[in-house]
Image 1 (cartoon, protein in one colour):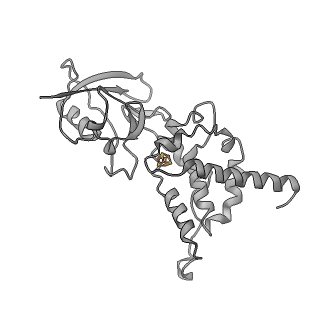
Image 2 (spheres, rainbow, N blue to C red):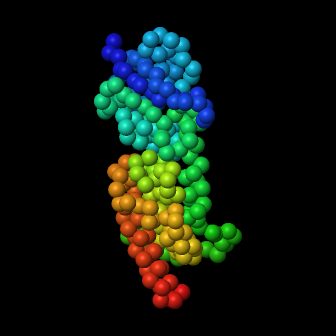
Image 3 (tube, rainbow, N blue to C red):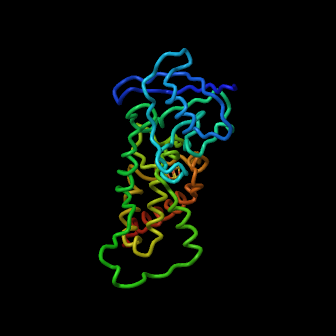
Length: 248
Ligand code: SF4
């Protein structure tokens, strides 16, 4: 039977050192990386026949909607559920996302992303208005832009690819800028546009972007990240000019 060679970067816990383990897995047509990992977990032995501890990873929806199974596969951040083994060069390497603390093996702590969403106020304050009827209408063109931005699943792939998202910068990252733009474009969400722009004009904001454009290349949801960054940049420029001119 055809075998597939797989190398996995493992780590027992947040404080231990990472190490590589190698495996051979029976080939099966059309399997994704989640099935590949499950096959390893079924046998629980490495390539030398040594018994291993169970490999941990996260997965939930299995249809590229939740983002929890994002890992670095053959050097590219992507979702294990949507990555077919047939499309990968061999041997296959699997690593956890490097921009987040590892909890164990392929499971990382993505809390930083949710903190970033809080910083850009990525929500709409809309408590108790349901009885007031429908809100303001907006154009289909705007709907299309907002729908594209709303598809973000907080997977972290754009942060993994972004050279400016690292331990030396406090950059909130491309996804957070795109989400700020999404809520700035909403009629009610725009009430807090100034706060979002003020934050993104600061140290953790847009000035960290070096226009590498790698984020947009890896985003599995094809979110127009660089367009969103350019739009927010324009808003920041207007804000700073008005500030200099004393216009509120
Ligand atoms: S913008 Fe794309 S790559 Fe970044 S977190 Fe959202 S879905 Fe993932």
